[in-house]
Amino acid sequence: MASIGEPVTQPIPSVGTAGTAYATQVNAVLTEVVERLEAAVPVGSLAAAEDPLDMNNQPVQSASYYGLYDQESAPSGSPFGRLVRYDGDLWYVDTDGAIQMTAGGVLNASAIGGIGGDYGGGDPALVYFRAASERYEFYDDYDQLQWGTLRARALEAIDEGTGFVTTVRSSTSATESYTLILPTALPTATGTGGISLLTVSPTTGAMQYAQDAPITGDVTFDTDINLSAGRRLVRPARTFQWPAGGAQYIKASGTVTEGIGGIQASGGAIDLYFNLSADTTDGWRITSVFARIDKSTAGAATVQLYKFVDGSGAGIGAAATSTGTTAETLTQGSLTEEPNATANAVYYLRLTLPANSDAVFHVGYSHEVV
Image (cartoon, rainbow, N blue to C red; front, side):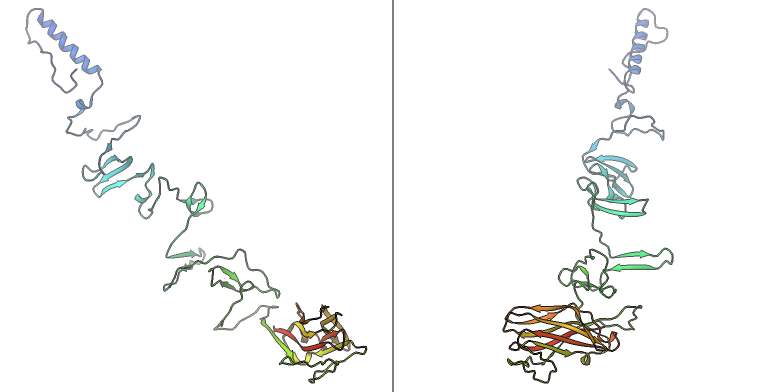
């Protein structure tokens, strides 16, 4: 059947035509017109195949859907202002070129100026903004809540009150790439109530605190170091011993030699006191006392720090004890005694040996300066 826009096939009788043929011809023309009006309008009836349908700026409303034919090649050139489907994605073409609006079934983020990359399709990356916390979040996989990595030349944090900006950036003359790993917790208080310094591990690049990895090398300050009340600087422990060369000064007979003062008890046992006060200065803190001994018997030998005030003495802490029969260094450690913190205090190293046949090579103590 012919369509709208094509010539009518039935002849139209001339005016004044006589006979029954006139009525038959009029009836045939009317039948063809009715059939064409009742049938669906084909595309070919809307416009010629080589011409676009021109709506003459008229709207199309209440359409169920608008389907696009998948083009065989990427869109480009005129006509401009058109929507096109190519390779399953939606494109818009204007005088500046073709813009891909979707990619793999999702919005094409690369089409948004400034944000690009491997979004969409099988890649679940996402930049998410949370209004409640006023925060942008970067995800490598949003569905699995796997965080992404942010790379930038610098990060700037602004003080909204003053407008001042704090910038975190890499060196402008770096010679290698490395990773800084923040500590697992806030710094802990040291024994003197201070907070240890932050350092960076030379092997892992992880940030850590000085109590875990003491600072080595020189630290230079170009101004004064001011400490709050109750805080002190502590210098690492130093060790002193007598005699300096480690020679034996208590011989097998128990005779005290080398000019080191002491008292030998009767009955064969040895009980010696070595005055430490004459060798200490203000600000010293004794951390340990020790004696290098060689016992000939299995009896107990002890070393302990003693404190005398106005003639009355007592041991500090628990004495270090040994019952072996080999040469060893007997040490009482974990001391925090400050010789000049108590008025009229005199400190001694007390060494006891079970027999006067035991030998002592040297005694000494360690201290730190606070």
